[in-house]
Length: 525
Image 1 (tube, helix red, strand yellow):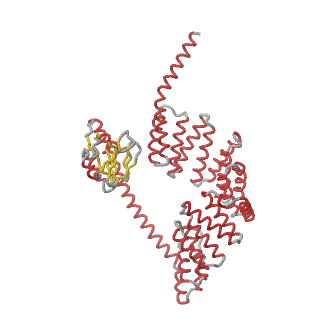
Image 2 (spheres, rainbow, N blue to C red):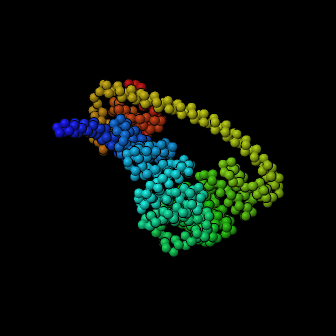
Image 3 (spheres, rainbow, N blue to C red):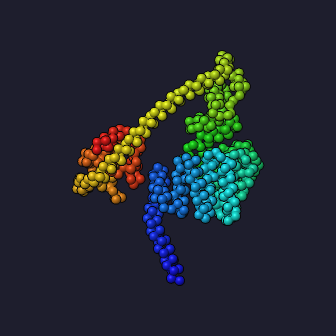
């Protein structure tokens, strides 16, 4: 009996010692992890800096706990936001495997959704579907009424929609519908996607959904975030149904919603959609007005391609063959990047309608079009290679310069740490006295300078120019890095080509004009 007591006592003491050894590392890792999460919406580089710290703290002592999976998941989120989907996927896989090994099945399948979304971004729809179906299988088995099951059905439907498997998409949209009955935002998103999907394979079903929407819903009740896409999809249904009056109404409502929510990328498409309605009603001058606006806003070749096509047609119908020819040529110029072009027959027919004095020149131009573009492409390739070489050499010089600066900074800080110099007294015009060692950085604000201090949240403010304030500081401790910033070298953590980060995660601009001053301070130790 006494032996058993001694064994249990020894085991308890051992666990207590182990806990006390691990606890500081866990606490430190948790602090760094929380900072990583905090910086996610502000600066991804800072997020990665702190998540690296958290990972280093915990990896050495314990990699089989929930905090460690949270740290790995934060890596995945950060790289996803940086659009490095391959790296993000690798971290999400680690979280998934570790969570299963720990018995944290619910967490594993939450991150499985992130894996599927990464695969979709990596243009791997088959793998994305496999991941989504694994999630569906889990929720159908463990929590068939969980809202996450409905969201996963919806994600599967969207994936089928994107891959033009429209009937499969509709099946999963219907499966997701019961989960969203109490969530208006999801209900509106669902009807938006279903109408868009039906527009591709069943106009009757699309028209029925629109009719049901009009009978049950006031337009003003539609959430602003959904209006643009919903009204645009309804507008397309009306165009295909040849109800051009309603088509214009919904397209203009979609345009209004995009302007109100600041969605600039879709404006060109919306103006083009409006113009297409006017083309179908044979109001070509008005169509041209909206097409000109669409072209001025277009930011991609796909957008310009459709606009050129419509401009060519509209100008042809108004007998302006010169402009029609011009847009036809601009249209065909995109043939190498897009797999849809005017046929040579269409272009030849356009040429026959053009002025007889320029007809022969026009046909000759069409004949030589292919060889001309080959020469242009060859020239562009050569110029691109030259530009790429110059960019590579410049980037290599910048990288070497940054690495040298970082090395000099580390050397400077090591030497200062060994010397442990006392700071100088800095007296402000407000009679406040500061120790130079406590000043993190100075920021210019008009006729005033903010002195940002270590361990203080609010800066000291003095009426003085930044140049004069800089002269009052110790030469070998501070450097001017920008027209608005002077920094204490002891607080710099990371230097890159255009910014530097302080040890608390603050990023300051590093100007090319003032970079020599920073170099001079670091080299002159």
